[in-house]
Figure 1 (cartoon, rainbow, N blue to C red):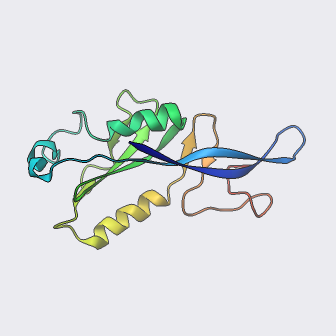
Figure 2 (figure 1 turned 30 degrees about the horizontal axis):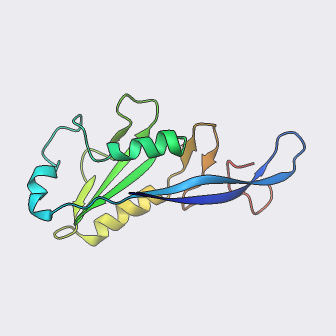
Length: 152
């Protein structure tokens, strides 16, 4: 089951400089439910990063539905949190965020390390396929004060 949050933002038109509101898919949430007794079967920590991964479930939503060129995805399944980077031009668009520290078991992991990874991903800017930049948690302002960078 997918849930979508849309962000409405003001966009400056190139023709006359006026502003209009435009909606963008901002956040997608997919809910997966599994019996945690099978965790050993779906845990991917020991497998090579080239095998199919749960991040692939986000590729359709990010590339086709949200029209994202590059961005990030987070999967929460049971006590696990996994972080992925997305590149629409890649033959495997969803890849582990980094070689190490890309997945965390919240039963044993340090909350500080997970928090740092969330902050890293939340601050990143994503790129839509039409060239518009989607602001991360850290935005700089250009043009009128109510326009995030990359939206004018």
